Length: 266
Image (cartoon, rainbow, N blue to C red; front, side):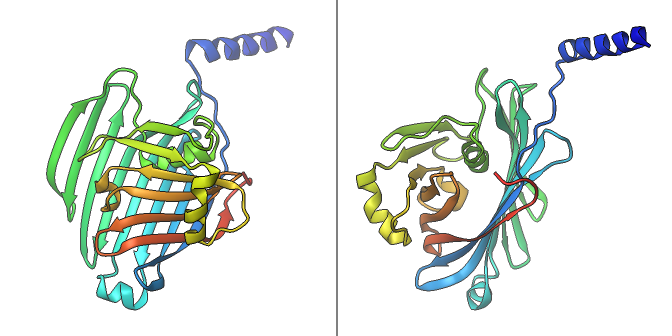
Protein backbone atom coordinates (compact mmCIF):
# COMPACT_ATOMS: atom_id res chain seq x y z
CA UNK A 1 0.00 0.00 0.00
CA UNK A 2 2.79 2.46 0.90
CA UNK A 3 4.67 1.59 -2.28
CA UNK A 4 1.52 2.18 -4.38
CA UNK A 5 0.84 5.51 -2.65
CA UNK A 6 4.45 6.56 -3.28
CA UNK A 7 4.15 5.74 -7.01
CA UNK A 8 0.92 7.73 -7.32
CA UNK A 9 2.46 10.72 -5.53
CA UNK A 10 5.59 10.54 -7.70
CA UNK A 11 3.48 10.35 -10.87
CA UNK A 12 1.46 13.42 -9.93
CA UNK A 13 4.59 15.33 -8.99
CA UNK A 14 6.32 14.56 -12.29
CA UNK A 15 3.18 15.23 -14.31
CA UNK A 16 2.95 18.75 -12.96
CA UNK A 17 6.45 19.53 -14.28
CA UNK A 18 6.80 17.34 -17.36
CA UNK A 19 3.41 18.15 -18.91
CA UNK A 20 3.27 21.80 -17.74
CA UNK A 21 -0.18 21.20 -16.27
CA UNK A 22 -2.26 24.33 -15.65
CA UNK A 23 -4.80 23.81 -12.93
CA UNK A 24 -8.32 25.16 -13.18
CA UNK A 25 -9.09 28.59 -11.82
CA UNK A 26 -12.44 29.56 -10.35
CA UNK A 27 -13.61 32.98 -11.47
CA UNK A 28 -16.96 34.54 -10.54
CA UNK A 29 -19.60 34.50 -13.26
CA UNK A 30 -21.94 37.47 -13.53
CA UNK A 31 -24.41 39.38 -15.69
CA UNK A 32 -24.61 43.17 -15.65
CA UNK A 33 -27.83 44.69 -17.02
CA UNK A 34 -28.00 48.31 -18.23
CA UNK A 35 -30.71 50.77 -19.24
CA UNK A 36 -29.53 52.71 -22.29
CA UNK A 37 -30.57 56.21 -23.35
CA UNK A 38 -29.57 58.38 -26.31
CA UNK A 39 -30.60 61.68 -27.88
CA UNK A 40 -33.85 62.61 -26.06
CA UNK A 41 -35.00 58.99 -25.63
CA UNK A 42 -34.79 57.50 -22.14
CA UNK A 43 -34.41 53.73 -21.71
CA UNK A 44 -34.75 53.29 -25.47
CA UNK A 45 -32.44 50.29 -25.43
CA UNK A 46 -31.02 47.73 -23.07
CA UNK A 47 -27.58 46.26 -22.68
CA UNK A 48 -26.04 43.29 -20.95
CA UNK A 49 -22.48 42.24 -20.16
CA UNK A 50 -21.95 38.63 -19.13
CA UNK A 51 -18.90 36.69 -17.99
CA UNK A 52 -19.29 32.91 -17.93
CA UNK A 53 -17.23 29.74 -17.87
CA UNK A 54 -16.53 28.19 -21.27
CA UNK A 55 -16.28 24.58 -22.39
CA UNK A 56 -13.17 23.83 -20.29
CA UNK A 57 -12.04 24.83 -16.81
CA UNK A 58 -9.72 27.62 -17.92
CA UNK A 59 -11.81 28.98 -20.80
CA UNK A 60 -14.34 31.80 -20.40
CA UNK A 61 -16.62 33.93 -22.53
CA UNK A 62 -17.40 37.61 -22.12
CA UNK A 63 -20.34 39.02 -24.09
CA UNK A 64 -21.61 42.57 -24.55
CA UNK A 65 -25.09 42.90 -26.08
CA UNK A 66 -27.10 46.04 -26.81
CA UNK A 67 -30.40 46.36 -28.67
CA UNK A 68 -33.03 49.02 -29.29
CA UNK A 69 -36.55 48.56 -27.89
CA UNK A 70 -40.14 49.59 -28.55
CA UNK A 71 -40.83 52.42 -30.97
CA UNK A 72 -37.12 53.24 -31.28
CA UNK A 73 -36.48 49.59 -32.02
CA UNK A 74 -39.11 49.71 -34.76
CA UNK A 75 -37.69 52.77 -36.54
CA UNK A 76 -34.10 51.50 -36.26
CA UNK A 77 -34.87 48.00 -37.50
CA UNK A 78 -34.53 46.56 -33.98
CA UNK A 79 -30.80 47.15 -34.28
CA UNK A 80 -28.65 44.88 -32.14
CA UNK A 81 -24.91 44.80 -31.47
CA UNK A 82 -23.11 41.78 -30.01
CA UNK A 83 -19.45 41.64 -28.99
CA UNK A 84 -18.04 38.26 -27.95
CA UNK A 85 -14.63 37.69 -26.40
CA UNK A 86 -13.37 34.11 -26.09
CA UNK A 87 -10.90 34.01 -23.23
CA UNK A 88 -8.34 31.63 -21.81
CA UNK A 89 -6.75 32.02 -18.40
CA UNK A 90 -2.95 31.85 -18.56
CA UNK A 91 -1.59 30.54 -15.28
CA UNK A 92 1.94 31.78 -15.93
CA UNK A 93 0.95 35.32 -16.91
CA UNK A 94 -1.92 35.32 -14.40
CA UNK A 95 -4.34 37.03 -16.75
CA UNK A 96 -7.08 36.38 -19.26
CA UNK A 97 -5.95 36.05 -22.88
CA UNK A 98 -8.30 36.89 -25.73
CA UNK A 99 -8.09 34.17 -28.39
CA UNK A 100 -11.08 35.21 -30.50
CA UNK A 101 -13.11 38.41 -30.73
CA UNK A 102 -16.38 38.69 -32.66
CA UNK A 103 -18.37 41.82 -33.57
CA UNK A 104 -21.91 41.28 -34.83
CA UNK A 105 -24.38 43.89 -36.06
CA UNK A 106 -28.00 42.92 -36.74
CA UNK A 107 -30.51 45.21 -38.46
CA UNK A 108 -33.81 43.51 -39.17
CA UNK A 109 -32.92 40.27 -40.94
CA UNK A 110 -29.47 41.44 -42.05
CA UNK A 111 -26.36 40.34 -40.18
CA UNK A 112 -22.82 41.73 -40.48
CA UNK A 113 -19.95 40.04 -38.66
CA UNK A 114 -16.22 40.43 -38.19
CA UNK A 115 -13.99 37.91 -36.44
CA UNK A 116 -10.44 38.19 -35.13
CA UNK A 117 -8.65 34.96 -34.15
CA UNK A 118 -5.38 35.22 -32.24
CA UNK A 119 -3.28 32.05 -32.39
CA UNK A 120 -0.37 32.40 -29.98
CA UNK A 121 1.08 29.00 -30.92
CA UNK A 122 1.63 29.96 -34.57
CA UNK A 123 1.72 33.73 -33.84
CA UNK A 124 -0.89 34.36 -36.53
CA UNK A 125 -3.78 36.84 -36.47
CA UNK A 126 -6.68 35.97 -38.76
CA UNK A 127 -9.38 38.52 -39.57
CA UNK A 128 -12.63 37.73 -41.39
CA UNK A 129 -15.49 39.94 -42.52
CA UNK A 130 -18.84 38.36 -43.32
CA UNK A 131 -22.32 39.39 -44.44
CA UNK A 132 -25.17 36.92 -43.94
CA UNK A 133 -22.48 34.29 -43.20
CA UNK A 134 -20.90 34.88 -46.62
CA UNK A 135 -17.19 35.60 -46.44
CA UNK A 136 -16.37 39.02 -47.89
CA UNK A 137 -12.72 39.35 -46.90
CA UNK A 138 -10.03 37.48 -44.99
CA UNK A 139 -6.50 38.44 -43.98
CA UNK A 140 -3.74 36.65 -42.08
CA UNK A 141 -0.95 38.60 -40.36
CA UNK A 142 1.93 37.80 -38.06
CA UNK A 143 1.71 38.56 -34.35
CA UNK A 144 5.00 40.10 -33.18
CA UNK A 145 6.84 37.96 -30.60
CA UNK A 146 5.97 38.86 -27.04
CA UNK A 147 2.81 40.76 -28.01
CA UNK A 148 -0.59 39.84 -26.54
CA UNK A 149 -3.61 41.68 -27.90
CA UNK A 150 -6.54 42.85 -25.79
CA UNK A 151 -10.07 43.36 -27.05
CA UNK A 152 -12.40 45.76 -25.24
CA UNK A 153 -13.96 42.98 -23.13
CA UNK A 154 -10.74 41.18 -22.18
CA UNK A 155 -9.36 44.55 -21.07
CA UNK A 156 -12.50 45.18 -18.98
CA UNK A 157 -12.44 41.83 -17.21
CA UNK A 158 -8.69 41.77 -16.64
CA UNK A 159 -9.30 45.05 -14.83
CA UNK A 160 -12.47 43.86 -13.08
CA UNK A 161 -10.87 40.68 -11.80
CA UNK A 162 -7.57 42.25 -10.73
CA UNK A 163 -5.33 40.73 -13.42
CA UNK A 164 -4.18 44.02 -14.97
CA UNK A 165 -2.03 46.75 -13.48
CA UNK A 166 -3.39 48.74 -10.57
CA UNK A 167 -5.09 51.95 -11.69
CA UNK A 168 -4.29 55.31 -10.15
CA UNK A 169 -6.09 58.61 -10.53
CA UNK A 170 -4.44 61.04 -12.92
CA UNK A 171 -2.44 58.30 -14.68
CA UNK A 172 -2.41 57.29 -18.39
CA UNK A 173 -2.25 53.71 -19.67
CA UNK A 174 -1.85 52.12 -23.11
CA UNK A 175 -3.36 48.71 -23.92
CA UNK A 176 -2.33 46.82 -27.05
CA UNK A 177 -5.62 46.45 -28.91
CA UNK A 178 -6.49 43.92 -31.60
CA UNK A 179 -5.33 45.45 -34.92
CA UNK A 180 -8.08 46.76 -37.17
CA UNK A 181 -9.01 49.89 -39.06
CA UNK A 182 -7.51 53.04 -37.56
CA UNK A 183 -6.00 53.03 -34.07
CA UNK A 184 -4.80 49.66 -32.79
CA UNK A 185 -4.20 50.62 -29.16
CA UNK A 186 -6.58 51.62 -26.37
CA UNK A 187 -5.57 54.76 -24.56
CA UNK A 188 -6.92 55.12 -21.02
CA UNK A 189 -6.81 58.20 -18.84
CA UNK A 190 -7.88 57.82 -15.21
CA UNK A 191 -9.35 61.17 -14.24
CA UNK A 192 -8.02 63.11 -11.29
CA UNK A 193 -10.52 64.06 -8.55
CA UNK A 194 -10.80 67.54 -10.09
CA UNK A 195 -11.46 66.14 -13.58
CA UNK A 196 -14.21 63.84 -12.28
CA UNK A 197 -16.61 66.55 -11.15
CA UNK A 198 -18.22 67.61 -14.43
CA UNK A 199 -18.59 64.11 -15.88
CA UNK A 200 -19.94 62.67 -12.61
CA UNK A 201 -22.66 65.33 -12.67
CA UNK A 202 -23.59 64.35 -16.24
CA UNK A 203 -23.82 60.69 -15.23
CA UNK A 204 -25.86 61.47 -12.12
CA UNK A 205 -23.15 60.24 -9.77
CA UNK A 206 -22.99 62.19 -6.54
CA UNK A 207 -21.03 61.50 -3.37
CA UNK A 208 -19.46 58.23 -4.46
CA UNK A 209 -15.84 57.17 -4.51
CA UNK A 210 -14.51 55.39 -7.57
CA UNK A 211 -12.64 55.84 -10.83
CA UNK A 212 -13.63 57.75 -13.96
CA UNK A 213 -11.91 56.36 -17.06
CA UNK A 214 -11.64 58.10 -20.41
CA UNK A 215 -11.04 55.33 -22.96
CA UNK A 216 -10.07 55.85 -26.60
CA UNK A 217 -10.79 52.76 -28.69
CA UNK A 218 -10.66 52.08 -32.46
CA UNK A 219 -13.61 53.88 -34.08
CA UNK A 220 -14.81 50.72 -35.81
CA UNK A 221 -15.66 48.97 -32.53
CA UNK A 222 -18.66 51.08 -31.53
CA UNK A 223 -19.07 53.00 -34.82
CA UNK A 224 -18.35 56.23 -32.99
CA UNK A 225 -15.46 58.64 -32.65
CA UNK A 226 -14.03 56.12 -30.22
CA UNK A 227 -14.39 58.06 -26.97
CA UNK A 228 -15.90 56.24 -24.00
CA UNK A 229 -16.36 57.44 -20.42
CA UNK A 230 -16.75 54.70 -17.80
CA UNK A 231 -17.47 55.13 -14.10
CA UNK A 232 -16.15 52.34 -11.89
CA UNK A 233 -16.97 52.06 -8.20
CA UNK A 234 -14.04 51.64 -5.82
CA UNK A 235 -14.64 47.86 -6.21
CA UNK A 236 -14.25 48.27 -10.00
CA UNK A 237 -17.89 47.67 -10.87
CA UNK A 238 -18.80 49.60 -14.07
CA UNK A 239 -22.06 51.33 -13.12
CA UNK A 240 -22.30 53.98 -15.87
CA UNK A 241 -20.79 54.57 -19.29
CA UNK A 242 -21.16 56.97 -22.22
CA UNK A 243 -20.12 56.32 -25.82
CA UNK A 244 -19.72 59.70 -27.51
CA UNK A 245 -21.01 60.52 -31.01
CA UNK A 246 -22.13 57.07 -32.11
CA UNK A 247 -23.44 56.81 -35.68
CA UNK A 248 -27.24 57.44 -35.77
CA UNK A 249 -27.60 57.63 -31.98
CA UNK A 250 -25.31 60.47 -30.86
CA UNK A 251 -24.15 60.10 -27.26
CA UNK A 252 -25.22 56.76 -25.78
CA UNK A 253 -25.36 56.38 -22.00
CA UNK A 254 -25.87 53.15 -20.09
CA UNK A 255 -26.74 53.00 -16.38
CA UNK A 256 -26.43 49.77 -14.40
CA UNK A 257 -29.86 48.44 -13.44
CA UNK A 258 -29.12 44.97 -12.08
CA UNK A 259 -26.26 42.62 -11.28
CA UNK A 260 -26.80 38.86 -11.26
CA UNK A 261 -24.30 36.36 -9.91
CA UNK A 262 -24.08 32.93 -11.50
CA UNK A 263 -21.73 31.48 -8.90
CA UNK A 264 -19.63 32.99 -6.09
CA UNK A 265 -19.66 36.77 -5.69
CA UNK A 266 -16.63 38.85 -6.53
